[in-house]
Length: 412
Ligand SMILES: Cc1cc2nc3c(=O)[nH]c(=O)nc-3n(C[C@H](O)[C@H](O)[C@H](O)COP(=O)(O)O)c2cc1C
Image (cartoon, rainbow, N blue to C red; front, side):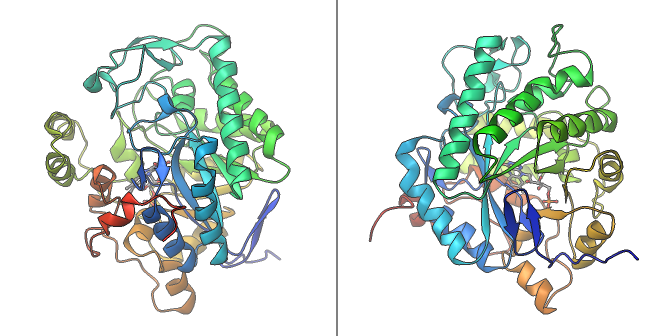
């Protein structure tokens, strides 16, 4: 007889046991100043922990200063240990676990100028970085790869020492490790390019190195694309090869996402971007140039209709191909969606927008107060990654901008 798993059941992922299977997805909080976590970030994740999630994920923690895509993002360095500890302690006090999404933007550096050429799998013109003057990218060589592996390992160790329960290596959405996996950016002709097996070689090596460094005490996750959502991009068959390689490299769990920041944002979100809101927020910050570019990008988006669990067909194919624990992500809107994910063999569910809208949704699902999220996928929240008070849902009261100017570890 098949046992019915509830999303409220605890789960063990490698060295980590979660109180339930709801995970807050890494979603750029914009709650750091000069790369240091602020009190706003502590409040944001404490609200989520108090609201019932099993684990919350701190988004986009760059492994080096040039690994950031926006100037205020956290970059991992010993100086910020007290701030990271304040954050993890506050989340633990509410009974939740906390994961660090560690990442490198590679050539996707849209918000700042990097010295020299940005790194990527391949060289050439860098369309994503051009707006900030990052016109050219260069193909990483062996020495670069060793250096970047060492940066990820150092970031993972720092996260562990700061009290994080898990690290999530970002291998999706068009960032550096995805620039290897995706044929949209990888044009190499050596053992890191060509076949899907070759394209995942460097990301798998990265995961194995991080696992070896911290995997005994800290869960090692990877966020991958089930597909890129474009004609020339990675297909689900590539996603399967990626998942198999990361399973072999020792991943404790894979988080299944999709889409690329430049080519297919609509695929990532299962709906069109809210360009009007993005343009409004960018103009408020005086960033007319980016606002103009965003307006132009809207023209190329297909007119798709949002569907709950929009990655399900793809994710099922990955589920059928691997044994490693998998977290379903993409359009979880209701308790029934989460239960369906469990019944289809996914170990966890990962949610972003519904928890930005209501950080207490998991408790409300549990008590029966709600069975459905009130989020309407307007995607206005995405615009607020450019706002000085940080990411928020436009249906909620504004964030307190003062909290985003005080370091997380500051004493009163
Ligand atoms: C405001 C916002 C910021 C995001 N920033 C990130 C990020 O920094 N890293 C990441 O992996 N995904 C990011 N995402 C994508 C989400 O993690 C998630 O993959 C996507 O929203 C689909 O999940 P959902 O349907 O539950 O919202 C972001 C999403 C939103 C709404």
